[in-house]
Length: 136
Image (cartoon, rainbow, N blue to C red):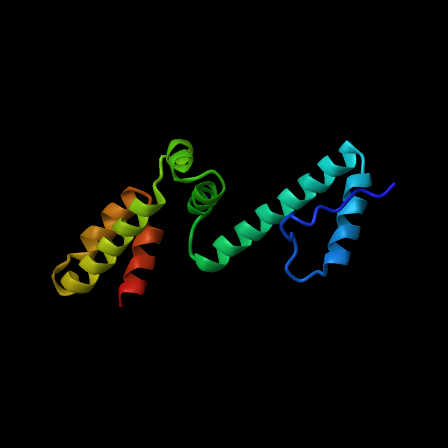
């Protein structure tokens, strides 16, 4: 049984001929619901992994919490990321730029021993060191 191919339907694959697309759609339509769900789940898992790898490549120095929050911002959207992580990706970028600007402009005037002591107390010493390195 062949399913009619709707010529008005938009092309799904830019790199496939109309005939190839028709065959692929016919094959997909012959699958039972369980097979379609399994295929969708596998594709979703593949896309999730691709997004996670992209985030890691873009932010190689980010910690696990930041990576999870960045993933949530992409996968769930900004509002849900804020709710789930109490973390706003836009605000994070602005704050990071502010820290770098302060380190660049006031580097000779900061008591870095004092700053490092409080960074260690607040458990953000790794972030401070990353910022100092990036600012120089």
